[in-house]
Length: 282
Image 1 (cartoon, rainbow, N blue to C red):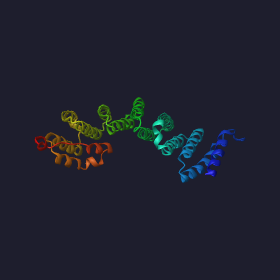
Image 2: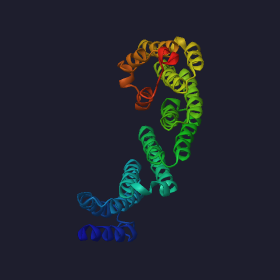
Image 3: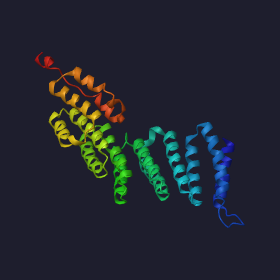
Image 4: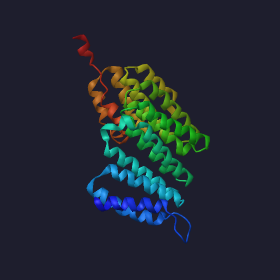
């Protein structure tokens, strides 16, 4: 660890001091020191120091105009910071948001929109348990940015992720609103298979709330887009609630499609409950 700390100090000097011949800071030399320090911090599981190391690497890569590498370094710094203080994430929300925005700016400037999407998603996942509004806000803001840039096919994943987070945390009104917006976008970009998956998610939400009428309505509204796999499980779910048949509900939950859809949908399906007619009589 002592050697790793020396490497950090060496890198700091190279980042500040100009080279006599080239007349610029020695970012390449600093990067070499930091990569060596990274290995030692990882080996020691010193995640706080590792986060500092990655942040310095990001500064160096930006100085060298290597924006993809800079974005990757910031992204790694986020993960290291979270691992260093997992119980203090609630107090780090502003900092994590700021770091996420920096990584996204680097990736987008380099044309790596998928990598930018991944950063937003991971930051949102980290802060959602302590600040759902901030997490979904990150995702919805990201979607608006992509929409302005006419990149709906890339941006829709932010909207979907926000909807799934609302679903996961029981904010069903917001989940319904966001899934409905996602369905409109999927229609614009002609991704009918994702409309079908979104309808299944909406059906699960409505049934969790005991609102069979709304579940039937959303199916009727989007019937032409519902795929065969989603259609089969939706039909069985609706019938289970219509007839109050727990066994039929269990059959629906055991269908393959619910085991391969988004984890949030699978988990919500496990929370559904119907009471048999016989129980009502008793």
